[in-house]
Length: 216
Image 1 (cartoon, rainbow, N blue to C red):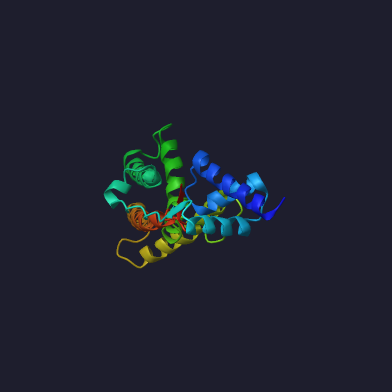
Image 2 (image 1 turned 45 degrees about the vertical axis):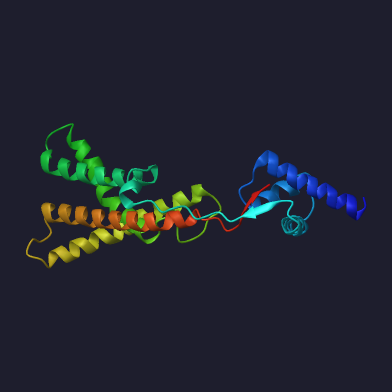
């Protein structure tokens, strides 16, 4: 195949991919063309730039998405974890103060919620506040990210709860049920709110493309 026919083939393939696939970035366009032609990405990219310079295609810059307000963000699916955390925390406090210890079988609800409230929520919200969108150690799959976040949350809860108890020991309230529950509730709500605010600021930035959009 001569150089002229090869370039013609690449040009036709690029234009065809733009028409049929409507790629949103140069990276997507390069990948799609590579799948069809098996030509190195660098060569395809150089050809795309050449077509842009000759006016056969047009590359337009995509504007970053307008950040949504925090109140609107609270209504999106991304904030479900926040509402679930708040609901579990408040339900636990209600169960602790309304269900007596000898009120079977309803007391098991108190036990289950209490376990989650003590062993999970403080650490989960703390880790979420520190790393709102990504876990600290990169992993190869979302499943590993989830497992790592679970492990970190459980471990951090086991570290935070004793610290809360130690601090309460030096206060007039002491280590009693009511101060502990209220303290853990305040701690969880504070971390959860901080995590939500950080996530709200971070997530829109991840949606900004690093390449120009490609249009015919």
